[in-house]
Length: 291
Image (cartoon, rainbow, N blue to C red):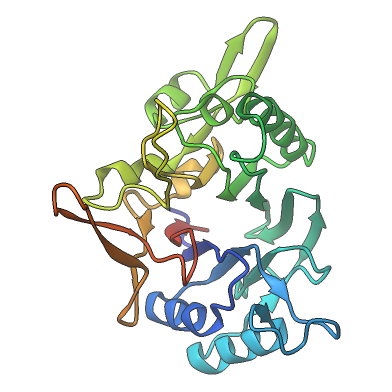
């Protein structure tokens, strides 16, 4: 590891247009988070001031700074529903860009460019899944257009790690084997050669429970895993060794606040855990990198 690097903790949470400000501050403080990416955040403005689901970004950052003693900075202020906030003191030279589904920050850290991309892709339940898989490849091409070798893409991909849009050559081309990526950093498919991404989110399948960030119960489909790992983090091959192994976690409790609730079967009387949608319909994820 480079002697100039430091371990930094990342948080992603799709807050489902809820005002989770207090929980965000508590979680960031508890886990010493350095980079925060939030999806479906409704920013407070003159027209929605006073609405319960709108969040004042200025107040959120102020509360984060007071509680943690760090200096957080907001990188996006355009009103999009994805926000990136960080306290990377060695990454002050930052340029940001926003697309409808991807928002990015290019940091200059230790004399290298690092691109952090916040992702919130289309909803798979209101869009054709095959279309989502094809669009994933376009999003990957958009990220590649920055011409940055070191990339972290984190967010709500609305696909599972094993699905075509994530793992497939025509999608994000993200696999779980570092050994394979080191052996051959590109996938050759047809006439096209595409560099692999490393998907650290597969670590979630080593966890006891839950092994997903989104729960979907639908008896009308024959292929439903119930627990879906829609919220993921992908690394370019030049960045994958910065990932701290097994640091990927799914958060279910924040300062005693349970993000899951019990659901009892009327037939078997067995109780299982599902997401408490009063807080959000997604669970947060965290992971660590050395940068």
